[in-house]
Image (cartoon, rainbow, N blue to C red; front, side, top):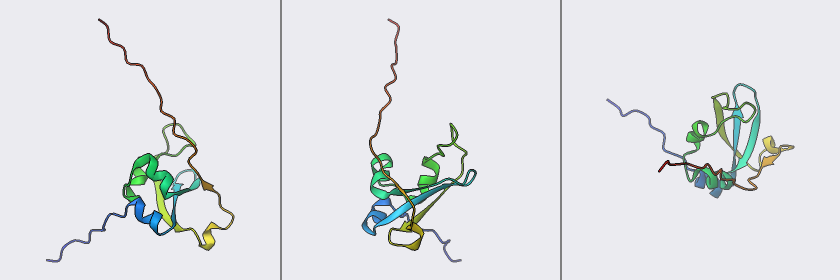
Amino acid sequence: MPAPNKSKPYPLSKLNDARELVEVRCAYCKRAHVYYATDLMQLFGDVDVDSLAGRMTCESVTGGHGLLHVERIFSGSREMVGRKIRRLVAIQIKRVPIWKEE
């Protein structure tokens, strides 16, 4: 019996080496954003591209809609004409106090 077809993980670092971008699109509200792989690596680490759909949420509704579609785009393609690329400016860490009664 032949072995099942398992795809190899494709990390974000390979996208960065090939100068490709990542497009994340919400299946519900049809919003799409294009990101550099280096910006996503700062947030999530060098993870598999397919795992980003479960790690990211749609920003139009608090809590997100659920289903995101992630694909890679070559930066020199026709699809990129007139599109804006979202850049990471800063990462804010939320400080939440935890109290203990003594």
